[in-house]
Amino acid sequence: MISTPPKHAAIIGAGLTGLTLAISLHRQGISCMIYELRQPTVATSGALMLSPNALRILDTLGLYERLYRQGYNFETLEFKNHEQVTTDKYYLGEEKLYRYKALRIYRQSLLTQLRAEVTKLEIPITYGVKFSHVISEDDNGVNFAFFDGIHATADILVGADGIHSTVRKYIGPDVVPRYSGFVAITCALQRNKLTYPANVSAKDYPMPVAIHGKNGAFVMAPQNTDGSEVLAGTQRAYPEQDRAGWDALLGDRKSLLQLFRQGYESWPTIVQSALDNVPLDTLAIWPYYVVPRLESWFSTNSRVIILGDAAHAIPPTAGQGASQGFEDAFTLAALLPCITTKLPLDKALTEWKNMRQQRIDKVIKLTMQLNNARLPEAEREKLAASGADVWQSGDSGELGWLYNADVEKEVLAYVKAETKPSPHTCPIDWLMSKMSATKPETVAP
Ligand SMILES: Cc1cc2nc3c(=O)[nH]c(=O)nc-3n(C[C@H](O)[C@H](O)[C@H](O)COP(=O)(O)OP(=O)(O)OC[C@H]3O[C@@H](n4cnc5c(N)ncnc54)[C@H](O)[C@@H]3O)c2cc1C
Image (cartoon, rainbow, N blue to C red; front, side, top):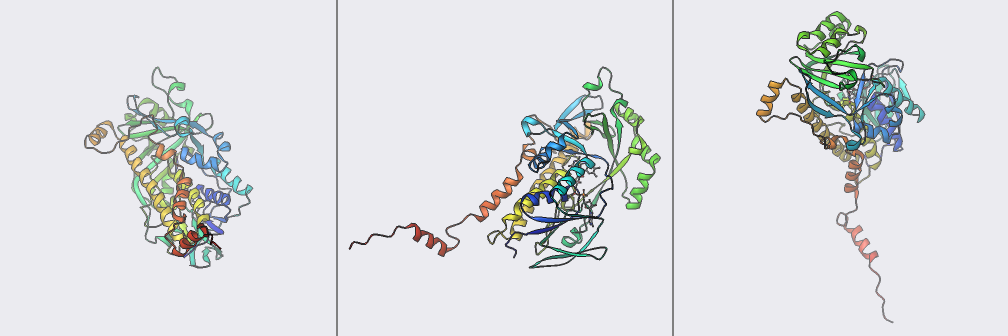
């Protein structure tokens, strides 16, 4: 049983979750070392949507001020039908209700800022090393190995190594990420290439927008500071490929463009104009894989832990993948200094996993409601009539449970409840406290 806080952590993976964990651990006085497979010179493409729950954490870590200036700040994603009528406005952020607007930011900008903070805090990162396996874990710590033969030790080893996690193999050897059957195809294009509906100016057309037509949904979302560049994308059913197969699809730009343009005639003009102006070099694919619900996120001896996509890669519709990784990292760092004999590590991690899983489950439910809302109108109506959950937004904070949650406070409330002194748990302590509280009686001479 581990009943003292770990002093030194090893983190596998310098992605969004791993870097956030390192900064959060430093804030809690726990030292760490990060090991990352890729070199820092490898550029990462694409942009991410960050909602208030993620931004609150980045703000607490002192990063929000730098970040919000580097991306596109907005509030809602507008849902439109084929006739360009707005059917819903989904809040991804809002200052009055949720304290922050949503932020769309290039992944590379976010990684650069997180890395700069890690460097400023003098947290060591070793790049170009590939974690291989756990050798052993015991009362003294965990030993682990890299593919180049190097071994290392730490009090705890945290796998933030993404959806195809190697660390996860030690905790759940049979877990395999599941392909959803769908692939997202996206490109980045200049907003001024779009043709807007008659009588609507570019300035008045809402962005980001999800247009629902016969072919499903087509999303357009500004992604640079002034919103002049938009991501445009849709999803298609596509058979699963191995790595070489996905690379081949990505490499064959002509076929990919054809796939992207499938059903062209059925889209409204604005979507057609996007499909007419695809810069081939920006075409990208994103096969949706999910990690099935795991029994545990830590090893039997509690010294190996996984989080972020390694523990729960979720479908993308609610834009919460990275945000949930931030929450995992931030809450784990808050919990670790609180380990005592009253709250040993295995017990604390069990509750932490339960708390985190409950939120992930709610995000998955929200994702399904949103997916239902994106179906063609006829199918949506059928679903609603059958009592299925279909998302419909209001404007009074329906997403407060997600965006306003103070996840660190919730963890600390749990710790307080578990560690508060109880007069009946230890009879001797209780008796002693009673005796010292009773004034000795004055004995008459
Ligand atoms: C195209 C796309 C768009 C997305 N859009 C959004 C969005 O809008 N909003 C949102 O919240 N989420 C979004 N997501 C999801 C989000 O990107 C992920 O949830 C998030 O990146 C997970 O971060 P992570 O650090 O847990 O894993 P990763 O980002 O996968 O990082 C894992 C790191 O571990 C390293 N690694 C892997 N194996 C090893 C090893 N054996 N040894 C050492 N290092 C290793 C990898 O090189 C990598 O750096 C999107 C994802 C994609 C692909």
